[in-house]
Length: 239
Ligand code: PGA
Image 1 (tube, helix red, strand yellow):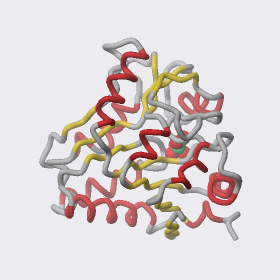
Image 2 (cartoon, helix red, strand yellow):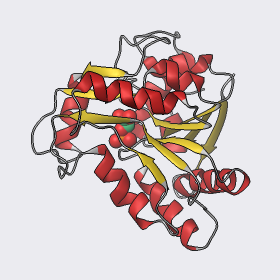
Image 3 (cartoon, rainbow, N blue to C red):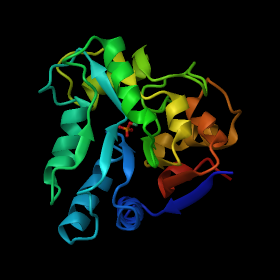
């Protein structure tokens, strides 16, 4: 059973950040998978503030990136590694934390996926993930199953369009690399972050609909320690 925590629009980002900060204080050597996107951005802003107050110690943590585009240059604004550095990692004191980006510039996609999987295979204490409008988790697009490995994938139309329309990519990417559902389901804890009324339908499908590859996020319900941290606006279709 997923543990559902609903927070008001003004409290959500801070509430998530406070919970993560508390976990870091308890477990400073946390191995943490982090996503990028519009959902986590305000959480990272709050985490930076907490870090400045000495309340979010990242100095000994290991950060493993959830996913990355293939084919975007390193300085593209949509690049997941650059965005995580810009919004969080570069702003933390003390730094640097150990950060495992995905080697899309250095390696061919399959080799980059394999190398990243080896990092994740050392264990993840906590995986934070967002919820795609199509139910994807990372770039585990619809059709992904609970045993999907870390791999290079064709991006779904929603993901391609989001890269340009919402994240400012200079060209529409068609491929990505993602930690697989299998790795995410192997993390000790999984926190699904959800905010905004536009996520109400997919959150309802995720939590109440059939557990199915059609909505990969629903597969997270098979995780014994899934925590859903959602902003109130996204819960409109949950009864
Ligand atoms: P978003 O993306 O946080 O920008 O809405 C979530 C996702 O696609 O995983």
